[in-house]
Length: 611
Ligand code: M6R
Image 1 (cartoon, rainbow, N blue to C red):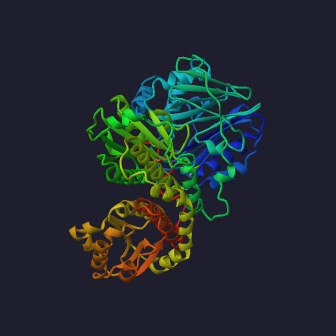
Image 2 (tube, helix red, strand yellow; image 1 turned 60 degrees about the horizontal axis):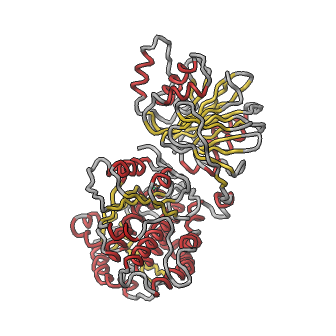
Image 3 (cartoon, rainbow, N blue to C red; image 1 turned 90 degrees about the vertical axis):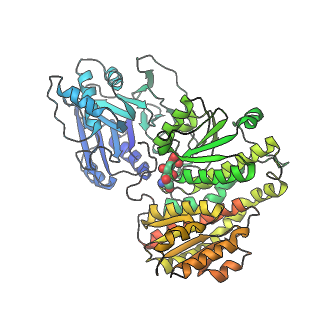
């Protein structure tokens, strides 16, 4: 998704913002640009394609500016071309604007501009250029840049963050936010901003997050935050102690592989401090006993991998707590007239905490006074802040677009929540000594999954020419299969068919021919006989079967063409979590074998902040 960077201070500003953009590359983009002040004029450099293409142009220009803004664009209005890339200038060439999100009423505004008596020439198809012209008209009345921005944003509808510089006011950056993230970095004699924290980490650890309907004015000497009426508002500075190394590849070929390998450590972090020496589960910042006794239905709302984690939540809530649970795609939720009652709990799962569809669904629930609980990875993100209660998933920054460790942290957080509720409600058998032991041993057992890496690579050699994969399972394995298939699609660009194994005979079995590969999850012992029958159905039609089972099992070995055996955790829902790590490795090595770009798959973005 789009990235924003900005800097004002004594350093070489173009160099700084280019570096900041590079640190945002993981968000996905298709063009990039920079605007800076040069001899009293604004220079704009922008190019379609990778940042390195822009880098060549930047290198050819002298860098003696002390104020610059930069943007990486993920096309929404208009194709990814040089002209559509940001920054955009106003009609008087006084200001340059970069922008994330969408101005929903831009056509209406463009029409207003067409009738304002001034000559508006547009060089791009973007909503951003229209916004630049609107700000330009306000600015032309002689007001300061911040006043022009405040006046203009009152006319914009949509979710966006925007940053503006002016040639009339060197040394000043003005930014505004409406439901799209913007972080301000506070330095000494310099200040900066970005759409995401990692971009600022090498420059400062002191940051503040701009709120909706606020405007920030940055100069080298300081920061002022106002509301849309110009009233100064106080702000809180957060100290961010993330390790920069944690945001780098750490010796792995790709962030994705690094993040897959981080999962045992992530598990330890999720569990740390949440199970005391007596085996009691301690979850801070969730509801108290009276609320849990009142709740009779759970609605989980999320997108993509977080949605798949939500399905595991359904499995856990229903199986362990007997609490009816629906899982909704956030993108469908607000248009689907969902049935909610005052006794429902709405759980929002999101790695980034900024997914526009999830945020919109959350706002709908809040408008209906529903109870909202977030399961979110990014501290201070919109979803984390908007939910009544939040469980932070502690996965650390996830850079690869394909989500891996975040899923594990989300599912484990759901498990902790279920155990917490069971403890409060005294639900028999859920939080037992055996369960606590399994959880405590989990990170160590998960580490052993990586002993399978060579076997996974061997399986990949067998199937590297496959052009269709089935992902099949029953029980928890069926839910995990959906996530395995999503990973395969995202990074290896191979079509997949994912469905509970028992459903095959009702249609998808027709797709099985020679050369089709089927990955079966079969970690649940009591379902194995059924799974074996499904395996036979596939093999009888020429399909090649890879089964993921647990290490004590011998039945699958006899039935499948290849078997990958994970260590046992003692709990079926935890076994399923480990089998997902195998699926992640399978997708990763398969994509590597096919020469795919792993960390930034085509057409995808890390944080989807548009609807
Ligand atoms: O940040 P979120 O968890 O809200 O993001 C939701 C999806 O966009 C995300 O999980 C996406 O599906 C990933 N690319 C999956 O790997």
